Length: 338
Length: 251
Image 1 (cartoon, chains in turn yellow, brown):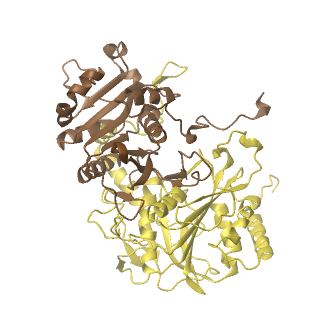
Image 2: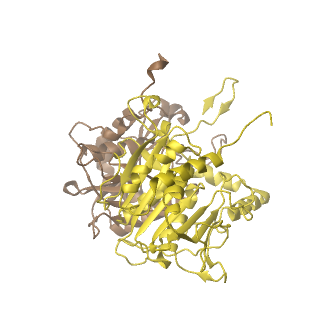
Image 3: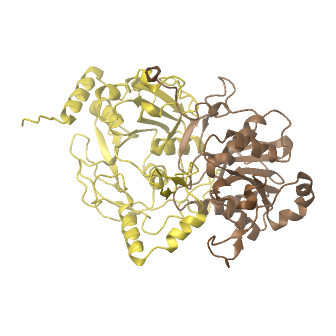
């Protein structure tokens, strides 16, 4: 507890996170029926849904968000067998999901990468990483949309989870038409902590393919970077990498030093790959500009020479120009006189 | 679930499992860091669940360039076979409403692995002490019934103090008495479940306040029945605990 200047006694935040279970239990016992109904409605909005289409839309066409569901695949143990315990058996009702085909709305019982063969999986998390992949990779080939994750949480700017517009934050999956085993995920929405494991199960499933290489691109603010110097003196943006034990290729920048850590969806993906012995690398761009920024997006350029993105970017100067135009189009034009 | 680093799971039967509770000041977690770092324990696997917030970073116990690039995740298991010691380290907080599920999975693993005993390192809010506790040592212990028989002599020789029972409802004079561990995270749940499941468990905790809790962690590990005679080795990940360097322009 702590005392404020005005003599109030308030509960101070604890570094240990949640307090005793007894306090959570007490909060649940105090709920009225109205509280429970609100909680049920919030849980319905927080459903993470995926949609797989039998006819994919090429990248060059606008894609509308569709909604469907994925079932929960069973988890596997380290011997490769599937134990009886479901990974998300403790998920409250209302947050369970099902897989539906877009056209027939029939349920599918498999995760995205169990349905398709995958040799390379590239995921961009955050607007700058998404802009980089859009300009340098997606504009260098024909990519077909194979799935879409629509999810709602408290960080979404819309309160309507059903009628989100295409320009709202979302998570879309593509594969390369000329080499369908190359997958790409553009994730510009925030996947909440309690949704990250669901996301993993629905994308990777319970049988991770050990010959699949995973590359993750994301950004963090430079003030998150711990160093003995002042972060103000660091030449941002700069790139750092983290790799799993099974990733044997050279990385395109220096590794992230202790005591720095990564969390959110990129950490969830890398943890999954480390545990199930998949080769994976995370490229993390520390920047002092978190909105869409040309310098920040361009900071990922060294990654184009990595094995994960090799051969996917064809014309770098043209892509740079496309990125510049993308940035210009997204700039807020402000003129108080018009 | 436990996922080993190698192809096959190690034999953990008869070992002592040390684990922290995510509690006030993160004292338990700091203590486990000290134990793993000082005893140079090797990573043997992960306790992979959907119950804790994901996080990754490079090896927090790195001693040289060669071993500084091993990736670490939020829940890892380390062992020291020569002392039949296993340590589970938790590096992040529980996802809301998942702590009970974690306790269930953890104790199920304890049973299936046939650990000889479990020692939980924890802490409790120092501001919630009663008058008696304020005047005594800040260290407390709790033993499950099946642990009491085997550890009674050792407890007496160590001169530990058992955690007092306090009123379940503090303001009520006729309230029942129970073990309360405010700020202890999952400590009480683990203890109560272990009592009912007949798991030999000892809880060691210290009354602390939030702040620089490194001295508290050192105090707690020294309270343990001598797992190490070596000086405690501070892990390399403990640098910059309170943030980056300051900008020179500030002065």
